[in-house]
Image 1: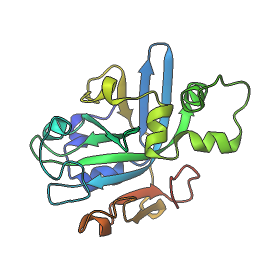
Image 2: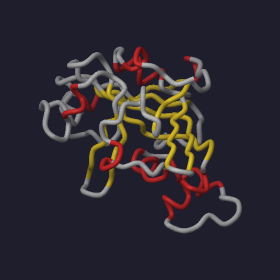
Image 3: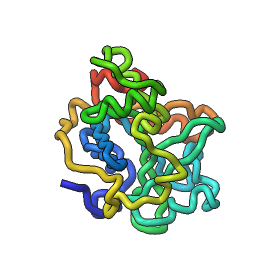
Image 4: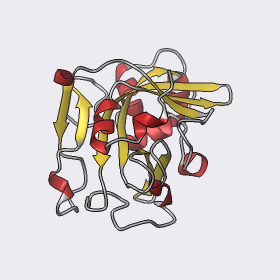
Length: 205
């Protein structure tokens, strides 16, 4: 079952935690991708100096002002893209970064996207884990991009959406500081990263 608006228009931290186990679906023509979300990071408001939108709305961050459920993709280091989901009611800024997925369907397409060569035969364990065990990797593997998917509404899009997945018990969820935001004076210490314990696709143990 597709996730509805009510799921996304809630407290960002709650959404980040409850996204674990949900399925991300991407339909690209005849290609179909499916992955289970196993790692997220919450970016909570304008006071969170770890958030890319903490300085206010710009052409890059304008979608953050919309109601929860929209896609927010931005560039980093001039070469990578990060896939985020807008949260909270309209005008209350928050977003969840999807840091890692466990591939479920369409691995052959993910392989071609990530490694730029045809998938011939069985994918070995190292290559499989490396498909989507990081935020930039999963964007590439799933064929997502800022140019095509920025601003899409996950509630109504026929191309990209989230579905109910597997229940993740509270005891199987780990929480830690977010990764690679040492520049944030306050936000670097917030425990706003959530991931499924012992899942091999977690980006960083």
